[in-house]
Each structure stands twice: as structure tokens, then as C-alpha cells.
Image 1 (cartoon, one colour):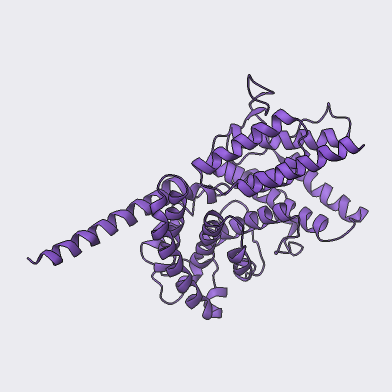
Image 2 (tube, rainbow, N blue to C red):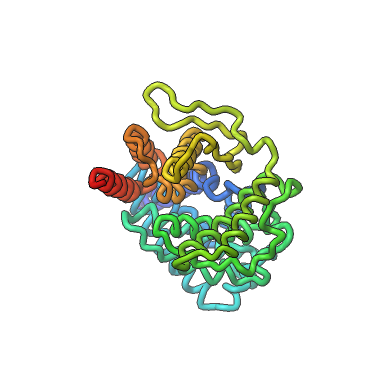
Length: 381
């Protein structure tokens, strides 16, 4: 057998092994980022199943896994990441040219093989969610290309949400919607701007959450409430008393529906060498009630909430929780006035760069700038 043929066969086998490692890495290490509010874990189960039969999600999965590996353990993986990203974008553009198919990215199962109604299983929106994370990991400055591009797909269905969507029964398309919403919220918290998505048309039945839909439904419900608050606060100069009362009522009703298991089961204010509190939650998708009874000023309340959010994020020691907390930390972090807590937050964030691959340098720089400006104002006073 000719040697060149043997060499080609070896190279092909090697490429297959590398792709298999990337694919497995996505399932075990990255998919949980997207399944934080999805008890059915569509991004870890359904999307890989479809990816084995469809080129678009396969390219998105491999590209994201490779770029994350390149930022954490093996810089050489970047070449594969860029190749599959470019391939994925070409496939995506070709699919989006068929506007009807793209907008049909709804609830059906589809055939998953790139033919006929394959968009109907949600793989287009899910693939764009992965590309959104790719662009964040691959560039120091967030270009926000894929988040803008996914908007029309995310809001194409009427009604936008239906019964069962809150609890994860909306299939892969529903899981893609919740991930798009959380990413839209994250970007808005970084930039202090309204969401791209308007939520006024969402039926009120989804605003509260229900124990019958499982714990994940409460997280999805409060994501909707947070999105509505962001749109009201960042979308206009002043908030009317009527709007404030409506938003406060939504949040109050959501809090009243929470069961006791959502509260921290243990907490420790500060340990030796640590300035942030440790707050232990039962599940990653649980929220903590804020303990602000001892706070007397607006600044103290804001700082307490900010420290609590950071404590919850890092005590969890869970990449899905940390990844989904970067936006809240970016918004709340500037309210932290205690220097020791500031320094610990910076240390924790920089550690995320090594373990998760997230480009936290810009976030750290923005926080340090805000803290410096706040300190300067205090000196001036």
C-alpha cells in the first residue's frame, strides 16, 4: 500500500479523534452553561443528537468546544475553532437565506438532517446561541454580532411564550429562547441599555412560575421580570409610578411563590482570608433572598446585594452559575465599596479566565475604573 495513502488515512483518523474529543468536551463541560434553567437539558442531549445528523449544529458545537479549550488548556486548538466557526457561519447564512425556513424555527421535531423542515426543531437558534458564546470567548471586545443576528429567530413565534414553556417543555427551540433572553440580559447589564427583545407582549401567566413546572420555571420567570425591569429602567429617562408599581408587584408575586428550598441552606459571612460571603444553595437554578435588614442607606443596600450576588456565584463553584453571573456582577460590582471585597472579586474573576476561558479582563478593568471614580468622588466630598 502506498505510503502517502497510509499517511492520509492516519491524518483522517487523527482529525476524527480530535473532533470527537471536542464534541465530548462540549457535552460534558459546556452544554451545562445553557441548561441552567432547563431540567430536560436540551443543549446537552437533544442538540448533540441533532448535531450527529446535521452539519450546522455539529460545526457550532466543535467550534465552541475548540475555542474554549484554546483559552484554557491548549492554545493550538484555536485553528480548529476558527475553521469550524467559519464553516458554521457559511452554513448559517445559507440557511437564513430561506427566510421562511428560518422563521419556522419553532416547536416540531424536524428531520434533523438538513432537509425539509429541519429548522422546525430549533437547531438554527440553538446554533446561534453557541456562536454567541464563541465570539465572546474569541475576542477581547464583545462584537455582539450573533446576538443581533439571532433576534428575529428568537421572537418569530406568536405567541412568544406558551403554557409549558416556562418549565422547559418548549423543546430545543424553547431552550434556545431562554438562552437568548439571558444573553440579551447579560449584554444589557454590561452596557446599561434596553434589551433587543420587547417583553410587553408576554402573557402574564408566565411571570410568576409554578411549582408544577419544577424549580427551573422560577428561574425563567424571574429572567422575564428582570428583562422587563431592564427595558423600563434603561429604555426611558424616568420610570413612572405606575410602571414601578407594576414591576414591583411582579417581583413581589414571584418572591411569594418561592418555596423554602430556594433559600440558602447555609451561609458564612466571611472566612479567614476571604472578604466575600459563602452562600450555599440547594441547586444551581435557585435564587437567594437578599438579607438587607441591617442596611440603613441606599449605598449599604446596593453594596449588600452586590456582595451577596458575588458570594452566591463563587460559592457554587459551578461554571454554569459563574458564566450566567458575569452580567449581574458587571452591573452590581461597582457598588462594592469594601476594598478587601473588591480585591477578592478581582482574584475570583481572573481565576475564571484560567478555568472557564471567559475574557474577564475587560470586566475587571471596568470594575476597577468604577471603583477608582467612586473613591475619587468620596475624597472630593
